[in-house]
Image (cartoon, rainbow, N blue to C red; front, top):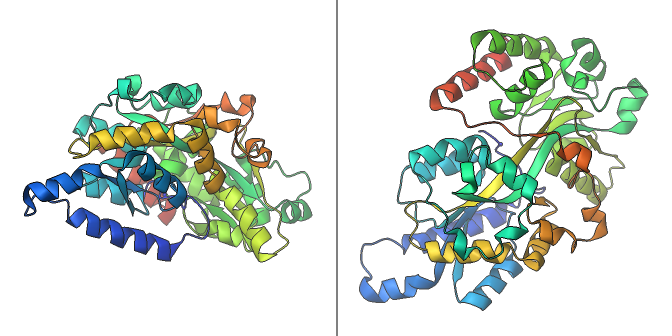
Length: 385
């Protein structure tokens, strides 16, 4: 997840998405300048138009915010970062607060003026943000001027330990060799291999695997990336950013490069459907790619004050804990971690140990020209030439 068009949770609640989108669209339609006069403006003062993934916020938390502040939240959803970027780039979107993917989206949008600087003095709970995650975000938002981390996750190796062990008992499940060494991945072809479908995910991983810590957009490196991927492409069943967790849970795939959140989703789904499938996740020894979804306020937001109040509300420990517990995703509110159920708090998939955190890597901001080159490279690699 379209760059980083993540599922962000299992059982994507399509009906809920559509209902939320319809409600938000209706609300936003009333936010325009045409008609309504002073009476409409007054009624509109206590509104927050929130744009995010479908499962990032729960109804009880939104209701509590409204009860405390009197601000009604219109929650509209997107299913891809690129769709969100297109909506915001057109201007006058009507949204006041957005959860935006840090790299590459936020990094390339800041110079374009899509976001307004945050009034940090209004964010009394900013100190609750995980310092490591904040430091990683500064890679694309120098000085952390425009965004506050909300949720985050990593990319790694998801696998069915029973099927893998039956084929190769000593398989190096903590190495990207599992997918990028042709003679090795060929062993798992019949039980099903999947990789993510976007250049943002795959090209940096391939580049690091090949010994390039920083992803250069030069022809020599990209040719090497293409050769490496095309050599294993015949053994890969799925190239996708969505739905693969369902196939893992049902035993239709045995190996994937995927998101930590989706590994947890696959585990839950396997238990729900009673498939008997076990799912494991490993952070690769070569690289631990991470993603951050951050709060940001559009430059033309009409209710920036309400947006700041909501960010500060979400950064409270007890609110962050409610959101993390309900979604199962990794939250950047470090003060909330102690309040989580131990089963989630101590889960190394969601909250990796210090040794793994030291190896976190997030891409820099790419120019539009670099984005074009890297996107074209991935299209050629997928096509096998």
